[in-house]
Image (cartoon, rainbow, N blue to C red; front, side, top):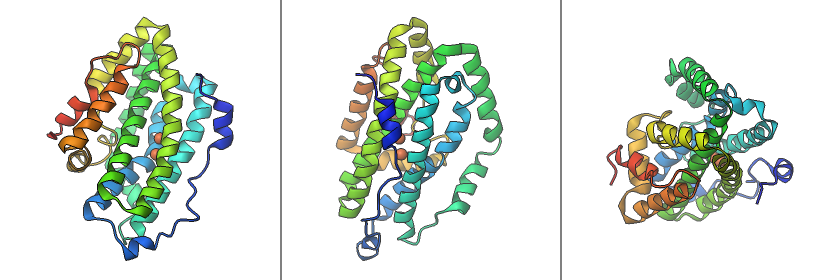
Length: 263
Ligand SMILES: [Fe+2]
Ligand SMILES: [Fe+2]
């Protein structure tokens, strides 16, 4: 079924947390591992606008359906970062504009190279690039949703669970858009399938791994996706990728996580 974009543009919203007692975390704080994971997640969520910068220089920006979605998506992801920051702030952790600025500055030359190289590569591919963008987006949203689900399970903290489940509901809408667009475009074009398969196989890396230090990605993957439950979640992610036209058998997520030394 096609994604109802008009409904989504009406429903897209800042995550509702007016009923959340963030002081609960002062009475029952999260574990050090959960806080470290949340820092990673906040850094990634607040980086969305920079990912958007790199996507608006590609053929995706010529498609109004996609730019409408990206506008709402960026808005919702912004609030995910803000809300996770409130959880971290309740633990007196380092959050806010100074940290965000540091994360962006740390990208250094990538701030220049990344939009330029993406612009050139996507222009060479043309319209079929949109299929790659949509498939990539679907895989990243699936991964993000799975990471939140794993953190909920590992930490088992009622207030955290409530907040993360609300975030996950919005991530589910993002998944729905990306997968419906990816499926259509991959089905229509053999070239789109070939380009997307090639790009994912050679360039895809776990969400956030290009933004945060390698040690943080390694920690997060080990904490949330190590062990039996974690590897089950990874296999489920790979099965989802398998169901996109032309992308079966990549074992994309499992292989990418193994590259970080996580078993
Ligand atoms: Fe998000
Ligand atoms: Fe999302």
